[in-house]
Length: 437
Image (cartoon, rainbow, N blue to C red; front, side, top):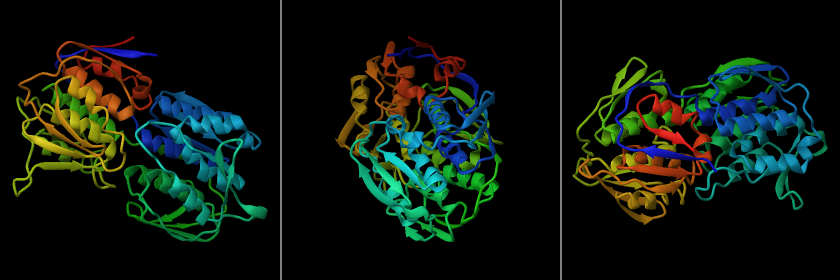
């Protein structure tokens, strides 16, 4: 098992460019299954999750051409339908969270698909009800295959998917993506209310439109899809990863360093810059770049009535849950106190025991809430040996180790590699001291 050895306390300087957005990539790459024509993708992050999804598509029969780093052409004109019913396909899907986005396109394309419980981060229950219920609303029938330990969705008697009205039980990003992709090839009109409206969904909508889909409501939680007979090829550029942008802001703040984050697609960052400003981090927008100046201290704001600041995740345009781990780590060295409320996942805050071992003042109230009392950089965290439990906790622990006194070791860094491309090399170019063991 690979690990990082991190010598803390090195100031950072220079500039860095965020990779393509992981969450968007998993959605738009799955959409290539909706057409037999070529789909060209640019700014694809070459991270473990994306590589595994591409490998799964190649197993299905998708022709994949890598033109250059981050540049791919996909052509799904000759798929192996028999492989989709194999145990190997179900097993590979169950090991990859991103495989959940294959269900909608494959159901629309072939009229049947296995839906195993997907793999990925161990951050608590991640139910797939929204996906399955949405596809059933479009006409799929559900059964359970005991031998493959997977759900099976099927359209009976060659009937096509049928457009309908649906009110989603939650604004699930991946659930919305799955239903949206399937609905593009359904007969008639599909209305999706309480749809997720994150930039990832907006980007998927733009790709589907360029492929010939007819979709109204871009950027809102009410999407109307007018089904078409077939989709055609297209080109698509993936947005910069807003989670990486937030992670780099956190690294600069924890190390009291000045860095520039380039080409961030500022208009698609939503509330992220404001969230860090509430921790006292001064950010400057310079065109499409963000400059984070070095600061001696970071003062956490209070609410107008003087009560303790609460930072909680929420559906877009609220704060993404993927950044709460980073915000929590940054707060450990700010001046003041903050309540971190992780509403979505009940196991995502359990990594704080590693930070407490490093000297952070954190009270874990329950699986969803933690109070952080900042050190105001008067006490440096101590080095520690730890394991990365998931992608976002992994990068948060890496940020903590970069600011700590001494040399820390983080194991199970495959979790970090799943979401961050060559992160050690890129951070070392800023002045960090990270060795991959």
